Length: 382
Image (cartoon, rainbow, N blue to C red; front, side, top):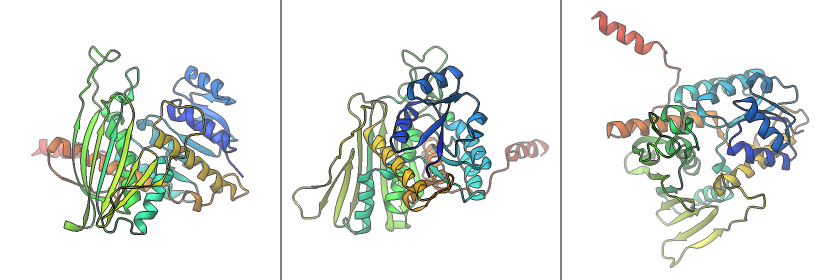
């Protein structure tokens, strides 16, 4: 039986998600927005019967058993942890910090019977599902290099908000790079051990953001990762993100091995073996049958559509509304994956400041919030 859904967020993802959920048979009972006006406007537009700016009103709604959280990263942890504690299944976007991600992991471990997955939709894109399968079958031989390029227009909102602030989870690295970091781990089956990165904010002010306010989130990011084994056995990954390029969106992921290569351009998958004169089309673009969506790049849009279909299959397998089957969503990123990704993001930021390679060390326990204060007091005493 499909659960009733409550959606947190009124941004572009929520606008796309709600029609996709309804198309797959889910009933969306409640919508949360940061203001009553914001929530009311979108609820009327999408035909959602209940709207509110109070989070508890959605979490405690008797008909809501699945919560989809697409809100600013700084607010994600609070809602996700509370939702699990109340007994709701959760699909959510990334948190703002590794500490927030760790708290989400702790909650998910405490309630293992509940669904708790990250909304990293690229894992569900058919091109990447096929790429992972071909890698497992040895299409490229021994994997050596991954190269990713994502180019597009500015990620900033029309007015000053969280997308402008690095500390609030804005910027290309956190917004788009986190999905790429997760995707590379999914494709290779390995995790980054060391990283090196460079972040820049080329557009610090514009027509809408000026005066005393400045953008601190990055609009250009280049980073390298050594994944898996040590020394020469590690897979070398390079990622370039540039959001100063108006025009068509570029999304290319290439993996190169000892006997060939695979490359996903947009939603299509190509391959070429060593010795072959040209690459072959392995998976064509099936096209987007839904309404035109300009706010979301096609790879993410089709991935989101596939993820919603997987959720339907997962919940339809059981009669109880909150019960779900793991199989259809087995490829989804877990909260543990979210913690790993956020750890890599923070390591890349440290590297950009230090100019050095940084190790990726995933926290195993929550840091003491008074640790820095205690160190400062000890220094003053001495």
